Length: 481
Image 1 (cartoon, rainbow, N blue to C red):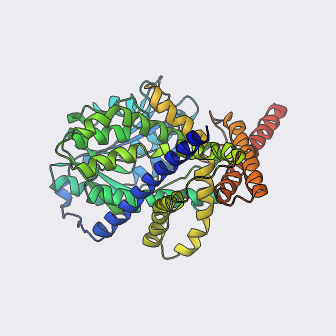
Image 2 (tube, rainbow, N blue to C red):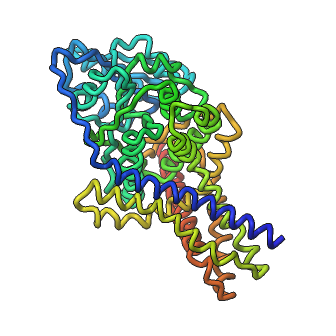
């Protein structure tokens, strides 16, 4: 039994080290490509193509007015711009959006609203249905939490206009509320790493570039050429991007074009978002792994990078396995081989990227990095919910699309409330393991177990606080009736 547990321990560390090595590879590619420049093509006002801006929304009462106002203010030839509000809402968002659409339509903006009484296909279904009535050659997409800058279309569409092989342009996501709390500050660091490092090398090194679901522009013919929006995964953006790459379409990343968006303000909203991304990426891995590996027009490096990136959420399960075997190994008095500790240092590959992204993007990076420990706690603390989400992605093709609550999310409730008990269980388990390690004088797992105990405790505390606040709000609302 001891040898089996040590073997599991070694396998988990090796798996985590592999993804750490992927981070070091990204660091190397960033060094090679960070100075690659691609100047915005000069396209005259009269030569700009027709464009449609699509706004897929569902129960976004807190932010829909802001989104429509920002979109209506986009600087683009009025006779070549169409705005589609794609509303699947079941609350008063529909009324708020309809009023905003009527106001701007009366003031000369070509804006229309499509309301569906069902959520067939969720976001992908809404986008696909609206494609038939989209008048633009180029399709820009913004989720409800974005506030696009006025020159967004002028800074992105010219790339598509001058290169007929280009299927999509992706801009960098900025942040509207990154200084609101420790939670949002930590999320900003995570997203900055993805856009400043990972998206940059994906596009510039041709490592299966991808669209992020919002703040990007697609060529409509490219969407149709690869089969349109499909709803058999909850990451419709990664699904479409992968098919486009496999079909030979090119992508461009515009890191200097920044579209700010709202970060999830509550732990339940963040869990919901991360769970959907985890499930969707895993579904895409199952759906496209054979096709990616057989893609002869892509380098082996690109294919391997794509597969490892899609499977990266599996690190959550590897971490839980590693934590689980600690207690029985401690009870048996067994210790992993000493050579395993240097191997674990490869895990530093990913944290280095988080730090590098802050240095690359902000002059005040030392101040922003004070929230890096919070990010590490969240990364560990969300391992149970993300592991469950990955399992759903492996086992189920039909998974409901659960939106990320916007505007603070106080009116919506997470589908992951039961996870609080699981997180508390992991906190207790790691805490017992930590105490045993200390009593035995076994210093090897102390850092891991100590970090995990704090992380599960922190996420549990945030979740419990939120549940208590929600309960009190509901109670007051009931008493006031």
